Image 1 (tube, rainbow, N blue to C red):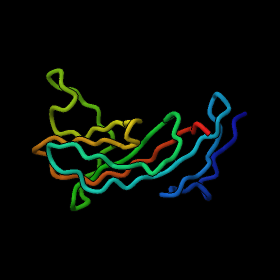
Image 2 (cartoon, rainbow, N blue to C red):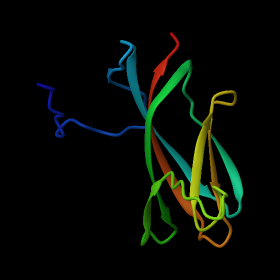
Image 3 (cartoon, helix red, strand yellow):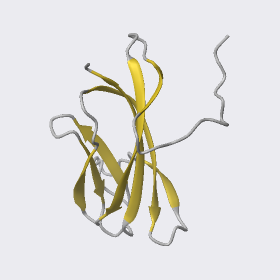
Image 4 (cartoon, one colour):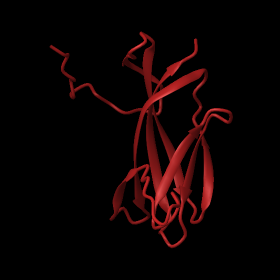
Length: 124
């Protein structure tokens, strides 16, 4: 039987937290990163502040408009006309060489604020 999550102590934090073990036995860490507002039709690189990141095992997030009246899951990986960045989307990726979350938002979509939670292992 698997262990139950105690939601009374389950919390998100901008500080790194240990949350479990990965399938290879490495410790899984969790950190929430406030990415700020993403300008239209451009890519924003947001530093993770994570040292020795080895592998991302999961990520989740949310984007919302400036008035807080419209929320969407992040990343939104829609494809239209063969292009990942077409339509009103907010997409992202993690780039290991720069240790950043790279977020792209299409033009015509109101500037969005993005918050991402990474679950990851470390090399050390």
